[in-house]
Length: 85
Image 1 (cartoon, rainbow, N blue to C red):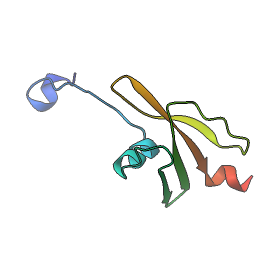
Image 2: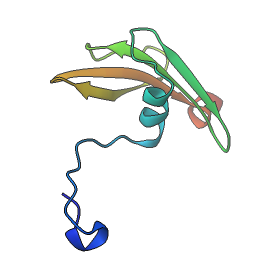
Image 3: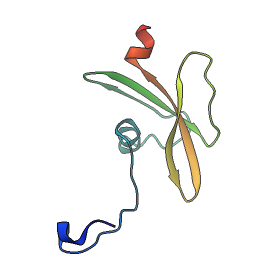
Image 4: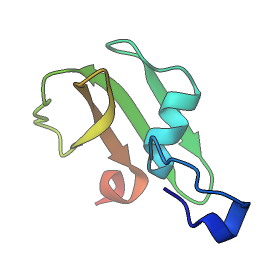
């Protein structure tokens, strides 16, 4: 719940998403294999891997993408700083 003093009443907080996960959800990458790429001060690629934790043999990060209805979905994430190393 938010502090009631901030908005004139308490508001329930029902979800939260990090920067790249929020962008992936916002771009409707909700099915297995859906992928988004963001280019700006950094370059990030996230690919929806479904409900099984993916294991990369190519230095990609396994990360939680979202959890809806009690089912957690994961993504493989690659960042430009990792790709350059």
